[in-house]
Image 1 (cartoon, helix red, strand yellow):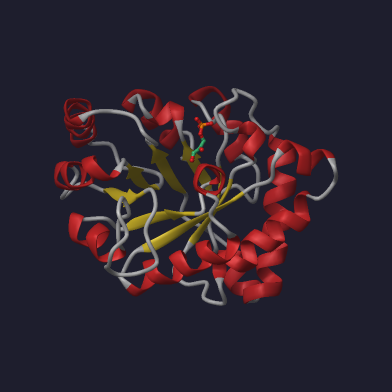
Image 2: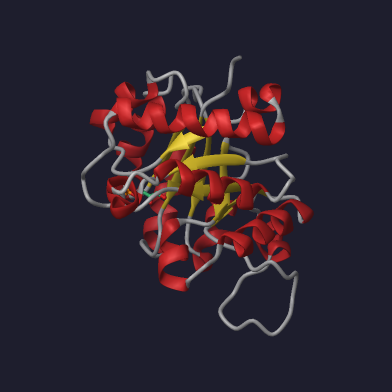
Length: 247
Ligand code: 13P
């Protein structure tokens, strides 16, 4: 089963317009063929600028979150139609920082993924365990629960990002073996939920302190199909190096 790699750059709450403009200009100058599908996830005020800046390039753009309703009185939220209108192709659903900072439940994340598809967006559903959950041996239970709720019975289209919370922004990457073991487990659970063939074609990304120096070894694992990169995606050179390591 060949799966085209996918690499996301999650800028989180970083960068200003001038930075984003310079970043897009650097990517527009990148003429080499990419070995992966690539999407940038800027924060909402930068989305339209980045989508415009990357128009006509192989680099796509996505939102970091969406509200499950298509419009209404939801101050501070962004809707699926607004993301699509800004030029997004993807949207993150259930990033651990949304789960932790905003108390997002598994059920809400499933509704967000369903809403994303309704508006022509591809959800990148994020799952991952805390350090306590890993230490207490409940990692797979947590991943299975988050995965089933996130898919909400509707697996297409979507991609999955496995981001162990203990590895996010800590510099402590999961070893390739730990990441592979979790990815293999996720694919097995996917096979139970959506069938072996669909599970075999589903892209499962790894996220958590990915850098140019560790990306190739992680990518060499059979069930790692790309990355969701935080800190290292803020520098276009580092991000491009990570993308190239998927070749
Ligand atoms: P870091 O790459 O900064 O650890 O962040 C990972 C992440 O949360 C991407 O969504």
